[in-house]
Amino acid sequence: MAKDPDKILSEVEDKLKFLSLLGVEFVSRESSVVSLEETILNCQKCPLAQTRTQAVPGEGNLNAQLMFIGEAPGRDEDIQGRPFVGRAGQLLTKIIHAMTFQRDEVYITNIVKCRPPGNRNPQGNEITSCKDYLLAQIEQIDPKVIVTLGKVAADFFIRSSLGMTALRGDFYDFDNLKVMPTFHPSYLIRNEGNKTLKKMVWEDMKKVMAFLGKK
Image (cartoon, rainbow, N blue to C red; front, side, top):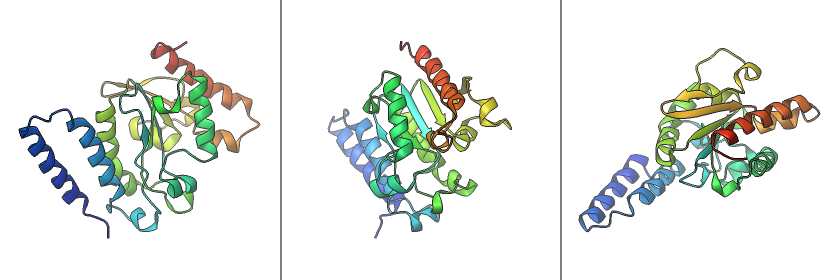
């Protein structure tokens, strides 16, 4: 039986307080990350918990300058418990390498942490249920740039009626962070022969690289 998320957080907070009293302050940040991941893995906030194989919190460098955020896990991610490991993930990894990053140098996650049935887009109530998890991850990692992959992810950060073609290519502000919306890798795969789409994504990534001082 899955543990109650609130109970998990309470237990971890009690442990941290005890360790802090002992002067063990260096574990606080790492423990808070582990606490959040464990809470996500045991989450029962929305009906997706009943249909998933496992939740997919995210993975990567907890001090990353660059964060990629998609919409939701797919079939492969649901099975493996890792974000972007299917065909779209392989393409994303190639993009990351082309940006002169290694995959483990960035952080990768999704708006929603559980796979929607049939790989449909996540619904509003599902996004709302996962919202605090994502915001906590962003606060923990504190990246300089967030790249949103696809319209669902872009809509979380940018309130606009524009479609992706018009929306992508410009930085937007979210709190003190820069957000660059671009097409989802799965969209590029579905339109594999469209070289214009690939070029637009690469132009977006070059702007991100320039902002981060990458050549």
